Length: 209
Ligand code: NAI
Image (cartoon, rainbow, N blue to C red; front, top):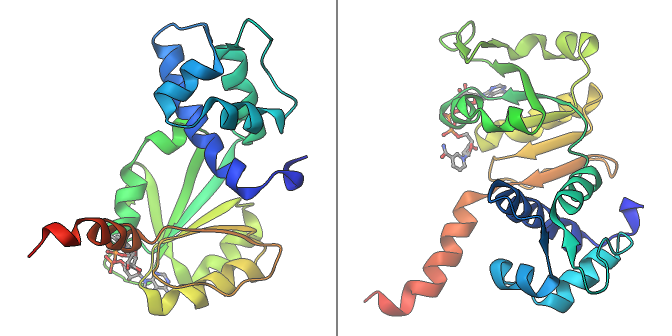
């Protein structure tokens, strides 16, 4: 089913998931598409269209059952599975990601970190050890890893990605500011934080003299 759904819709699902969790925390049991549109900033028709991709979910005159919708969107997003992850590059960003415990709450479980710097190898962050990247192929032969987070400097990122892919890793979360060249069956999500800052600077540039 998922491959028929447009990427734009898929990209909106995490936001629905986040808002629905907030409603659950406030003990709200049901919500109309109009109310959901008011808190989320999407139009009610956009919301109905999005949910129609998955067979609707709502009932005429009742709206949406918040618990059900949350669970179903979680299921569509694949959040019911456990994902094993690794971090390559245990510098500032790699350590920050390793120290962020909320990924585990959503079943993304960090198994190991890798670096080439001898001063980092052997350290551990929240119980996760930094291993020598020289041995990553052996590690991946023994451990099935679902997602690798690339947190190396940009010059190293493509080489690291190639090694991961050659060892069977099928999904990458890339923080290095480089567009990786990868086989078509590898999923990659890029987080280029500086591009968001550039967007902000575009919008405020008129006010800056
Ligand atoms: P960093 O220099 O602190 O960490 C990079 C780490 O990668 C180092 O520990 C280095 O030894 C390791 N490394 C280099 N080549 C490697 C290889 N072949 N295999 C394994 N490890 C290798 O840099 P930082 O600040 O953590 O940034 C990492 C990446 O994230 C960079 O590409 C940076 O542009 C990007 N980034 C960082 C942000 C931040 O807030 N720190 C924000 C946005 C992007």
